[in-house]
Each structure stands twice: as C-alpha cells, then as structure tokens.
Amino acid sequence: MKVIFIGAGPGDPDLITVKGAKALNEADVIIYAGSLVNKEVLAHGRKDAEVYDSAGMTLEEVLAVMKKAVSLGRTVARVHTGDPCLYGAIQEQMDALAQEGIAFDIIPGVSSFLAAAASIKREYTLPDISQTVILTRLEGRTPVPEQENLAGLAKHGATMCLFLSVQMIDKVVAELRQGYPEQTPVAVVQKASWPEEKIVHGTLSNIAEKVKAAAISRTALILVGDFLGNDYQRSLLYHPEFSHGYREAKQDESK
Ligand code: SAH
Image (cartoon, rainbow, N blue to C red):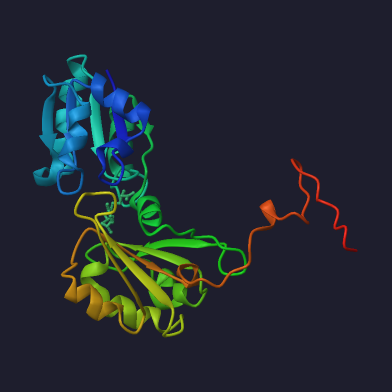
C-alpha cells in the first residue's frame, strides 16, 4: 500500500538491483518511463500487474494512478531509468505523495554514467588527473542556473559526464573549449549496457564530426577529460611504500 520508486539501471535488465527486482515482482501496478527504461526490465514484474507507460502521461495523471492504486490497498512500482535522483523528475512526485500522506520508498539504481565507465573500461578519478566528477547537462527546455554554465565548469578541468546534451554536440564542444585544451579526450557512449550500445572516441577537436558520422543524437553520455588518456600516477592505496589503516608499508631493502 505504498509507492516504491525503483532505479531500473541503464538498460541491461540484469543491472537492476536485487532489491529493485524483488520490489518490481511484488508490485500490483507498474508505472515506467517508457522513453528510456528497457521493456525487458518489466519482465521482473508480475504478469498480472497493471502496467502504465508514463511517457505519454502528465504528472497529474501519474499521481492519479498512484493515488487510486494505494487507496485500493495496492503497491505501486514507479520505475525510472538509471538512478532516479539524476534528471528523474522524482522530487515533484515525492512531494505530491507526501502532501497526500501516501507512503513511499526509493530503491536506487545503476546510473548510466556508471554503466558508461564500465563500457569504456575507465576510472573517472585518477590520481594527479582528476579527483572530481562533474555531472551536468547543457541547457535545453529545462534551464541550467547561470553560475553552472558549461564554459565555467570546464575551467576546472575535472572529469565531466554530460547527460541530455548529445543532440547539441556542437554547442557542447564550443563551451567546453573555453576551459579544456583542444586535445582533451572525449568519449560518447550511446545506450550503455544495451545490445545496440555504441562508443565513439575522439578529442574536443573532432568528436562533433564523429558523433554525427555515427548518427548518435539521443540516449548518450558525453564523457570528457584526461582520465581517458594513458598518463597518470598509480594510486597510493595499493602502493607498497604507502601504509594505511589496513596495511603497513613494505620496507625498501635497497635503502
Ligand atoms: N536517471 C538517469 C538519467 C535520466 S536523463 C540515469 O541515472 O542514468 C536521460 C539521459 O541519461 C539521456 O539523455 C542520456 O544522456 C542518459 N542515459 C540514460 N541511459 C543511458 C544509457 N544507457 N547510455 C548512455 N546514456 C544514457
């Protein structure tokens, strides 16, 4: 008799959490974001569950379905792509439910920026390269606060993951060039973890053409930074000359 928000993961139906899959299996009503959630994820749900695709619904319609189901003693699974805390429009749903006195829980999911790192087999946080990951987007119909403009963020030289922006790749590159050097590596990953996943590697100077040549115009992340290069210092965590709470440094016998 409550609503459970579930992060469906990036696409691969095995990348939902065990807890998320169990909750989906217990739901009487499933409302999923059809534009992005892989329909195969719904196979974790019961055959007799009532299923709604929220792609063609307004917030009010989604809330009405939730309210009615809960009043009939049913459990509702609200399925969002990746993790719902990123560009999920989940806050307005939670606030409305709280106002109605309807209980809800959230089960996190594997965000697409995590799946994309796995696809390209890279670590975002390399010592000496960047210890910061900026998750952002270019302004679309949804505004971005002025102090977070992309050119300004680019000046930090940090690892950056851009959501919802690949369709404006020329503008993205123009803004990024105001902060990162031309030769900064960029990877674009479309549909990470889906069978039709596409990966394009380049630099700020050529990634726009490569993205267009690959016909990538949606459901992709733009990953930017020197973490994509090969020049970095190894981590101290596993370095023999570095001690920490769980391991003493090895004595250097040559000294
Ligand atoms: N909550 C989601 C993001 C929703 S916004 C998450 O945590 O991933 C939708 C945007 O996410 C898309 O425009 C795209 O930029 C990105 N995205 C979602 N799934 C993706 C995937 N499998 N591969 C690459 N990018 C993806």
